[in-house]
Image (tube, rainbow, N blue to C red; front, side, top):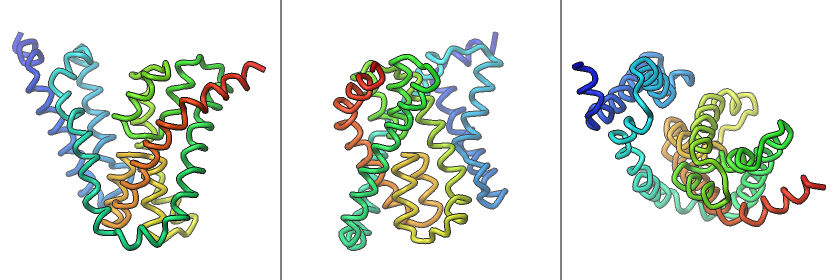
Length: 238
């Protein structure tokens, strides 16, 4: 009876979300920044288990935690501040960054769509897979416009960001990539917001370039996919 009353309060789920994330931050520090101790991954696992065990519908959870989702937009805009601080380096790398942006953005969309087609997924699922590498607010809007599944897109975006954040450090060491601008831009381009958060753990410069990659990828993908996906669908129908 007590839990039912508490579970009906929107503030409970907002507080639990913040506490779960804070626990993830604490655990990551205790483990000296280990990639597997990702605060977002830990918070998602804890909250998912709690929702399942308590039988709480996701809609009820979002009544409280929706405020955090709303703040994604302002938080994304605020990433312009570290970008301004690295303006000189940014101007010097304009052409290489543009080339990486076009190639990386199109490859992420086409590979996601192609994987869905290879596995026999329907149109809605293929669209959701194609949009997996852009930040959540933009991904949800683009998915709705193109006839995808916003709920599936949200899950795929989160999984993509987690995988990118987990694998980035080991991949960069294996490839011997040490330039923070390169590391950050690639991480933001492929793993959006969660990748950007991971890039800030490398350095402020890496975080700034990750924010740039995330923003530009979202912009380019939202403009390119409406004409690219119909072409891919026609190609598949042949």
